[in-house]
Figure 1 (cartoon, rainbow, N blue to C red):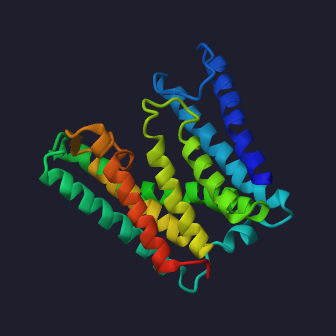
Figure 2 (figure 1 turned 120 degrees about the vertical axis):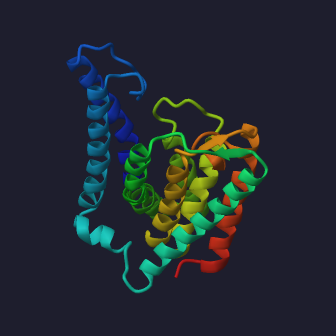
Length: 264
């Protein structure tokens, strides 16, 4: 229950911090977490605020449990076969997305072309590997090592998994977003990561799956334009929101379950 409380407090702290930033900048207050149309300096302050709140949750959780920070999170990174799971997860995500995009390009549902200068492309693509690892690690620490691990201690497995999946998906819609119909795709994505954690009880495999997906999606973003219908190919960087993407996530989740089975 402690994890649920901390996760519930996080959006409130972010919203309160956003109001303080807006007031300091002399801008109107807003009651949704959003910075899309704000000045660059305010956007930067909001990003710092977001990362500070998430870091505070990660630091506070083990301490409130009476454990050391390093000791708590170290258990999710065993060194026996864990790094191999990281590579397997990344390879699986890259393979699935490569096949998906290959099929879409072949059927003209996605079109790829160069739209930026070499310097711009180099700058954007150079940051992708680091961004994929950083973003995946942060989300997996928060939603699996804190949230799902805590839920599995407090509830039967089926209930803990359902809550972990739904909260992960809903967290992507706490801030103001352009699309809400993509929610089933986030549910399917949460199912993949939660099953990977349940099977291994470590973060290696979930981080690998997560980072591999971000790597491909962010890497292809500067080139791809979605020409097919949204129900089929999703939208923008949410290809898993379409019917084919959700099916692929379900298939990959089944692969993880059949490969790893019940937690070792």
